[in-house]
Image 1 (cartoon, rainbow, N blue to C red):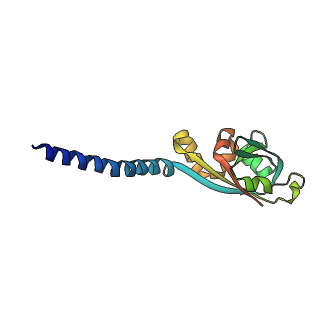
Image 2 (cartoon, helix red, strand yellow):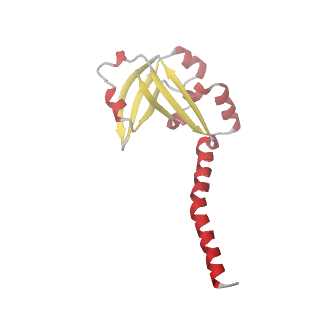
Image 3 (tube, helix red, strand yellow):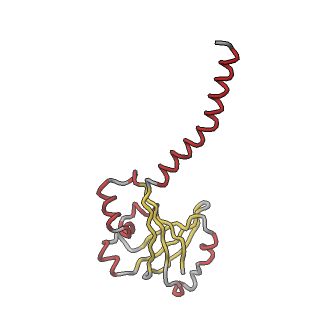
Length: 148
């Protein structure tokens, strides 16, 4: 083979790698990030806001779940929970601790990576997604997305 054919063949392979590798990585990440998560949205109406604070660039809300229903059904290990607001400074500033009575509901999002839980927990969460509030180890996967 001539050097010219080898050079052209090598150039074509490099161009294919440059084009295909990012697409393959993107496809792999999409499959891992989106298909391997259990996403749940739910709201709570019986709660009390106890405080709010900032750690680094993440905002948090400390609240008490006052619902007897949730307490009896999910056997909560303490009614006080701390959930992230993410980097949502607008929501953080919207919460007035001097007037906590004005809030009638809170909307939460939980995104649990399925590779972090066993099959039994996965089945339990699929049957009753709101049971995510029952275990403190799930708190890191729960984000408050609105307070109204």
